[in-house]
Image (tube, rainbow, N blue to C red; front, side):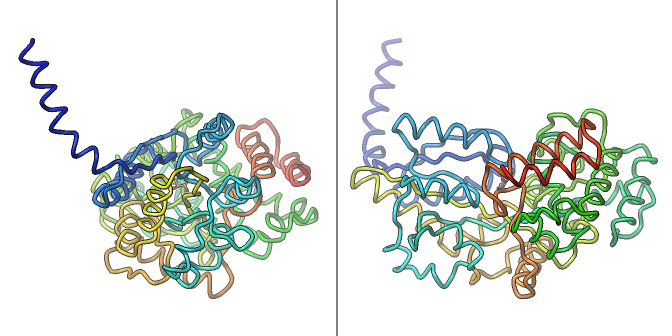
Length: 415
Ligand code: GAL
């Protein structure tokens, strides 16, 4: 016993210099708790540790980040904000407006972020001309993930190119005894599916009119009615246990061969990669049929909160620089399933789906068919986004019909 406690005491003394070396520390609040997400975050954590900065992890589970945002509000009200917080789109501006975020302009100027970060992201990273947040990736939501073997067993021989082909393929998968569409019944997941359905049904002009301009005529149109009819078609293709299921559990159903398809952002690819699955061989990635050529994006950023003390500020600056590092942007996004938040990172280390994602994004930016995700806070601020979630989810759960859902969207936009 005594011997044991002496060993512990000696170990503590020996460990002291190591602790001193990592006196600088960052606390990072995030919602990356799935296997693929955690693997990606580890890249950042270990890069920082190599740089002498300790990592205090504050994970708040819940895809899409709603729970994380609730936890953040409590931390800020208690006067103890974390160093950095994973954040999406308009939420960043809400905190910046409130005067809670740091000014990173000196670092941004030194590192040339104005030229390396695409304008669509800078719109959210900056507030009143100040860099307040650092983008780590670009995800996009209008993707479908498919199990190749399941499709073959169900007799689906070609990638569906149109909405009708997709529904026909999913019906075949269902008839063959598999779950056609792996889905997690949580509002943000239904809204993620909705992003792709809107693009496939109305294209980017309609998407912008309805969900960026919040035009009542577009929101109440026959096109919106068709969007909800299509959501109703999908509802028939999910299994009976979908309610409340986490998104990564749904990805797992496709990975394990229980289900044929999942409509989900490319963070789902992080789960496939984490399970050592190979695109083209084990699984397929393609755009929601009908939405090819368009991209609904979201970018995870780390909003930097105002911290006090030279050590804390220095650690925060190191974190920001580490996130923007070109090598990191490649290594992290290869694992996460997303694409780099800088335009000057090579695609050479990315798999086929990643290469396709990078190409799609560049083309959509050029053709002006790149739109912010409704579901992930890049089209409208949180208050309206949440009101949309509510309508989309009530409709998906059969509480309101297509017509009532259309009227609900018009009303939700007036929140
Ligand atoms: C998104 C986020 C992604 C992914 C997903 C599920 O909002 O941008 O990085 O983590 O939630 O958790």
